[in-house]
Image (cartoon, rainbow, N blue to C red; front, side, top):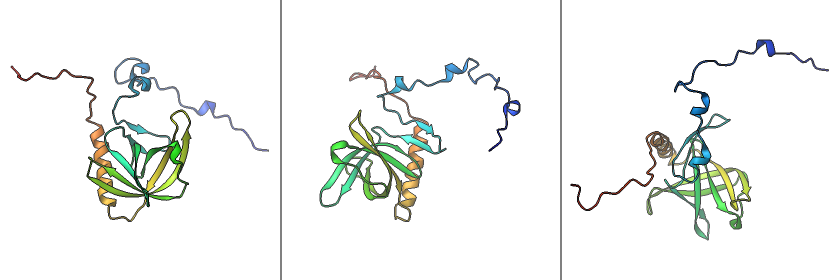
Length: 174
């Protein structure tokens, strides 16, 4: 039988330092429901301590399906180790460990190829898609460019702002 050690007396006291804004901590909370549907890559700290940048409409992705052609996927986030995308449920799902080819498009014609390995696939019944998490295959010709691209996306995230329908100027500026 194992012994249970009571660590309560050893716990540190609750942090009583004021928040940066000088107000309560609730003022510093970000309501994600208010931001839902708006475009803004957001830098997230996840439980596994990986920084990810969420992608909405910044870049687009295409799956390369041998003997079938290209299939557009929605890309959601990108990190130095991998990215995630969703695939319509009717298209099926890739198996964990499966290697696939992706194209990341910067505009309608310019892309760079990626070779990735599926780490997980999860069915989202509400949106009727299968979300895939993939990791980059190492040792490809685009490794260095990919890391620069990911770093660019992450640093770009820090300066982005949302256009909430700013008024457009007319034909003259006077």
